[in-house]
Length: 379
Ligand code: KG4
Ligand code: ZN
Figure 1: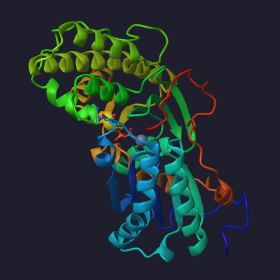
Figure 2 (figure 1 turned 45 degrees about the vertical axis):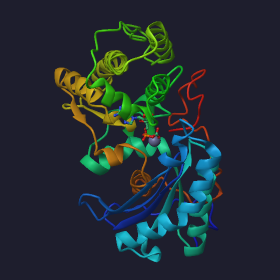
Figure 3 (figure 1 turned 90 degrees about the horizontal axis):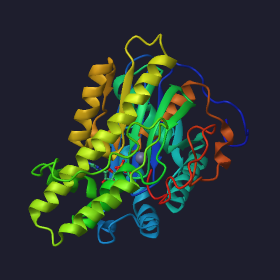
Figure 4 (figure 1 turned 60 degrees about the vertical axis):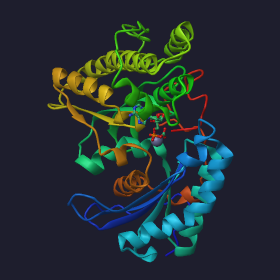
């Protein structure tokens, strides 16, 4: 049977069947491939999960350079896919579908990943699933923790800062987003201003560990505001002003600025999240033990994690932080989103015609935010 000729057909809808999906992720600066399996009602298994980071290629530029990223994906992807299949012990003709990130992200990388996936799908006569990268992040907690719907997701990465109510497969409602910089971007820009290496987040956290969080009174953007969204560009400006006022900076100054910045971020984030926890309680009163899931690179930050953990404990929410390797960009989450879509009867053969989308909101109902995701570089 050919999956490619029958546009629009629903494929594969049997929850007890063994499903194995090859996932491909190339939306930013990680080239990744993975095979994930779901066997009947047992817990899903990640059979392989290969991630090649391009951090070194981009470090000299202090951020991701789209052309370099696309070229690096072209060079690496075939080998990464081969390695993921070899590691999994599953042959290409044994997988049930190929799932690839089709957006949002850097369009060059998306084209490389999606075209490669289409070629593999066509050659092996397998269905192709065009996956939204954000859906991958949103559904990861079901892969790692078997979480039931609905739950709340906080996605904090280099390109996104969002709170999403995850109500079902394909059923997402964005409750908050950033009106300017993403949180990871704010960490990266702060690091750059202070002369710390790229990527900024881990280096700001490291410097903050020995700093005094009370030395600089930085703003807590949006704290107390009835509008649910995030904003970080004002904080970034305040950091610049604080640094300029005392330049040249000693190591102690840098540590104190980092600690003060991190404390401001944790405080502002906590305010936004507690608002969302309250809303979740109101909208889903039947959920006895609701959960907050974190995803994205910034979720690695211990101060932020501790703040969120405390908030959840106070509000009676489970706090779920999947292993860091599955919080940051990877292809297991893409393969898993493919399995979820197959299982829900939501995969369609006409995905073979899907064109990559650099912008692709999870929730088409929410109005786009002016200025959000300007960099468009990371998701
Ligand atoms: O999810 P991710 O690996 O990539 C995408 O953005 O898609 O997130 C990377 C972002 C970067 O901005 C990085 O600086 C930030 O996550 N990050 C951190 C930490 N580790 C990574 N931010 C704060 N503290 C950290 N420990
Ligand atoms: Zn991501």
